Length: 234
Ligand SMILES: [Zn+2]
Image 1 (spheres, rainbow, N blue to C red):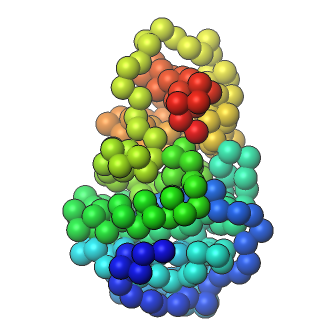
Image 2: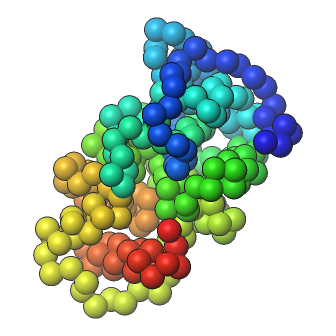
Image 3: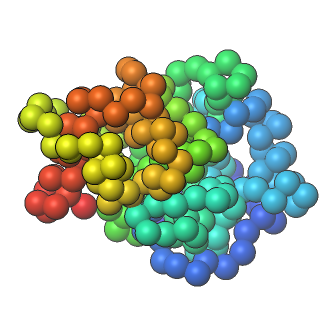
């Protein structure tokens, strides 16, 4: 990888061996102050880590080598996989999170993330549909990186799927169970029920996160699946 993308090495003892090849990237926020987060991500008793940490001022810290399994996703699910840690690169973004004064991710932080993620996606050939938030893979427990995360900016750089623009507002799913089936096919663990709908909204329609399966939410999911099934995205 391009050595200029990483500014500091801070090896964490919290990793083990992968059981799967890398096919995903999972984005997080730390939900605490910067130094506390770095202490926790390297504390053997905390048993958590990520491959990278990016501070609000754009410093990229490598904690775990990419060929090792970092411990960031916990109990999670995406597109048939339950061992998300084995299948992913985890990136922690310095941000106080919803519990402690959630705020915008500064430009410097996103400008450090974009080239790092581009390098990761290219080297591992990660499909855009597998660049996800922690809330997408653990909807029952997690809300990070949250609705302020600039997914649209990543999408413009082809680093994640874009929010579908042209929606056919015909009603693609006759009832809630057919919506949930489709949501599961897209990747989500739908056993979380409304929480899975909230996670979908947080990612794809962040201006209203209420767990309701409304017409716009149904249309967005339908378009995402159409685009993927047609081969326009993967
Ligand atoms: Zn997280």
